[in-house]
Image (cartoon, rainbow, N blue to C red; front, side, top):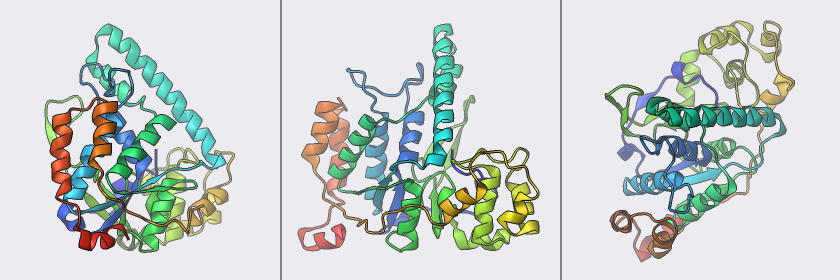
Length: 340
């Protein structure tokens, strides 16, 4: 879900070329869910699958998008979620229930031949499992990009890398990383290009955009702690938010009351998890401070074995991408600068 305050945040559009030669920490789960949701059969609403019924939408999205980034000179660092905090369990259960409900609606719509409803609800039924995650890690490692396993929330680990200047920015569609303190958030990096307007026969252009934390705090007139409080009021992965309070009301409230204690006097807290516990989690989340970002080298044979031989991707299309990727690889004399 993420924190839904992006609408009031200052942002500016950029080009992929603006990120050339920069390391970008990517919230892997966030991207995989997007690919599972978007890359689907237009008629059935089902994700892409091989002849054995195994889902391949995530691999398709990761392979072609990561190739695009590499060809633009970007150095992706994919960070995977670890064990969720206990206070997230309720949200995980709620998400599972919503997915199951959406899957049932899509099933009935499929029987009725209602393609629009099928596509709408099939997208909402996307889910990750250990098999999908493992195949994703394999592919990314064969592509030579860095893969990091976070101890807990992936965006927290991404943000720690950014604050530590190990990466230039965090890439995610959610705004959580700003609450975790990343100096820079990149949105739309996974979905640039033309996108169809839902339920309409028209398209719009999606471009990458950067959100600078310093600009956010300056324009909104708040401090980092108050930005975290805003997120908690609107709703996070750890609490549903306060009914009737959206981004603009949360901003007004934190500017008037200043502190979490004062804000809580003005609202009715509606979850068992104390607000202070959620606040403290954003301030000091569990991260691996010893994690090292290491890049590998492109392994075309392993990629083809995984995608073509195992998951039945088109050999012609995979070869075309690999030909482009080979041109992005450093020469032997400069390999050290790539893998540091």
